[in-house]
Length: 419
Image (cartoon, rainbow, N blue to C red; front, top):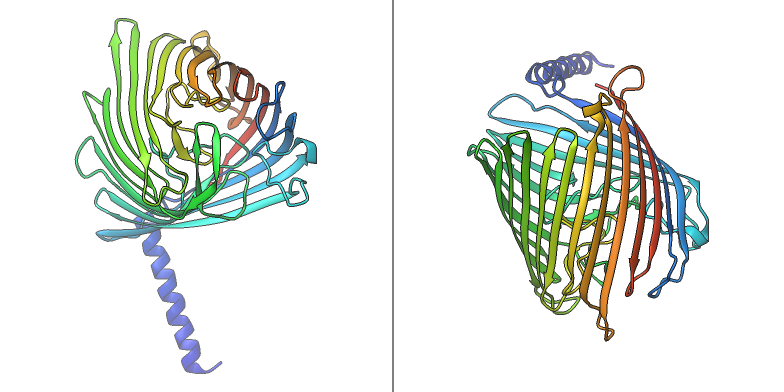
């Protein structure tokens, strides 16, 4: 090594060290966080009355997942830069070609579930004042694109987003997404749509655009929202929402009301779309008890559109049935209990019943469906096992126009805070 080369290495090393020291002082490193979650997921769905092209009578798989999340702080200066990363790994524990398609594992061309699948995604971020720009791997959670982490591994999208909180109480967001990595896939691909519960496999898009505003006021007890979304050449959608909570003596009353208006877009790759969706979910909470009642209605000639395979914020949509088919009307009754009121923090139980009718099946008869859910979860709050969570879900769902379902899920999770 020459003297000049050695000197250059020393200077570079000193520069890098100084850079890292400055970054650490500014919070790029000091404000960084990282968590690792291990998620063990058993999923069983029995189809007791097969309706439709899929004649598989059962979907049952067991898998182990790992989710690593890293979020840096920001570099110094008026404009700060940072980096976020997510790494996921899914491992097959039990599956069979006659029990695939649970959404836990990818299905290979031979009909077998993959033994494992993994993904690493990175997003760069930039912050100026109270505005943040991100580009890369994103996991947005929006009224028009809900973060649907309901299987072994979470889905993600690739693109750019901007969030601004410059005005007190007002959050402005916008974004352009070009592809998605589904919850049971390692790679990424174009985005497809769903109408109600039916995937629209015949077309895909490489552009999902959105813009929206949420304004919170009244001591943050009231939030109004207005959003626009476009799955290019497939559908566009407008959303208006209101959330409010009001203390009344020992009770807290709540309301979540929303309206979607959707139509076809551009080249109309899946045909004409005409859907207006209204939902309302009212709540009353006292102590550990929370009571809910909900009403949801579909209008127009089409079922509710959304990006495959996401859930939506519709009040009566649940992970099994959506109650969002053409012209459907549905009611919900729900009861939650938080056992912290009895001195057992972390233990929560929920039961609900949803019934729907007036469905335009296109088959010459009125569609009807109902669903009963029972969820029990417990998260250890302290001690050596803090971070351990257990959730049990049992579902019975019946319909005269789509497949009946009996479902059980058991989810064990443990989260380590690495730093």
